[in-house]
Length: 178
Image 1 (cartoon, rainbow, N blue to C red):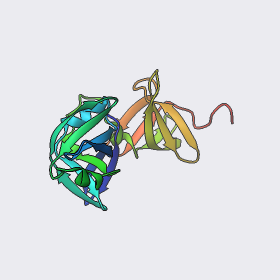
Image 2 (image 1 turned 135 degrees about the vertical axis):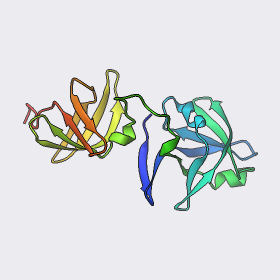
Image 3 (image 1 turned 180 degrees about the horizontal axis):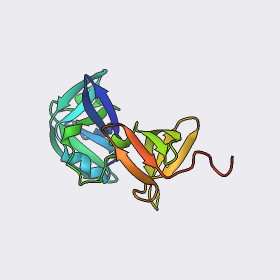
Image 4 (image 1 turned 120 degrees about the vertical axis):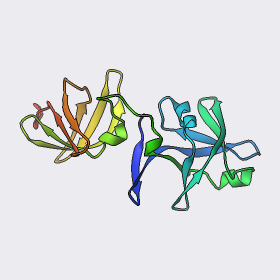
């Protein structure tokens, strides 16, 4: 699942979507989900909503796919006016709500921010974000320049140490084009 990580008072939250519209008159909201697949956002409750700069916890009461998106009803939102107040509000979950992963599997949000070096010890930058392509996921590294490195464990990604905040890759410090 791709998601952005945020920290507040030492607690890790993952942004999983945002309120994108209104649905009906009984307080239902349209949700733009960042989870993959999109309906996975409905697997998490409570949601954390960033309302006027403050995170508020709200139970997910109901939700379902609707067209190409998701609609949901949350605690404390019973009419269209209350739903309107939530427009464009970010939706997050607590990091510990995510299922445990198998050995060698990682959530993208856990990789973001890792310092990346190559096998020669050259610093290539930090993982800014990842994105999907047809063939494999790709890391965007920000450092002295932006680098795109395939996230293929074993072939390019040689070591990941989340505790130390580092990743070792088999990737040149300089591109052939330079």
